[in-house]
Length: 175
Image (cartoon, rainbow, N blue to C red; front, side):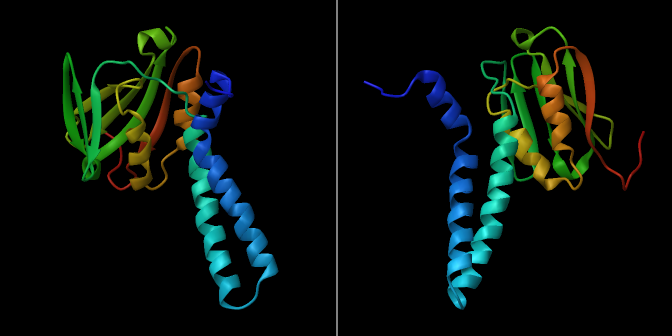
């Protein structure tokens, strides 16, 4: 028997990283304000770590939860691999030139949100946003300087047709 409504439980599970790191941040700030010496210094270090975790937790929680799509995503050793029923592929994060997210306006039932990765050779890898473990793609963005997290969030919540540039390799120009 559960004392928490399913909707409340889903909300808490989605926001758990932000909630826990926020609590750690508040406790660390209190400790930093009320202590002296080495303990104060350690408290400020904890404040910085907790603040970074809080920001990342909020970013993750803002992304809509999409599951049940075709295929599986794996991000390992700076390589993105997608295995789908109609194809797939793998690209190295080091070889990426551009990342876009697209929506068709057909709604979530049509796997509306897709990632499009393009490498230096012009090879494209398209991955549905609701593929198994697609959240790992969001984590892969942390390896790319200047990645636009807000573009991913905007596109994932878009009701109409849209295309958002998430990242482009500035060193090698465009093709």
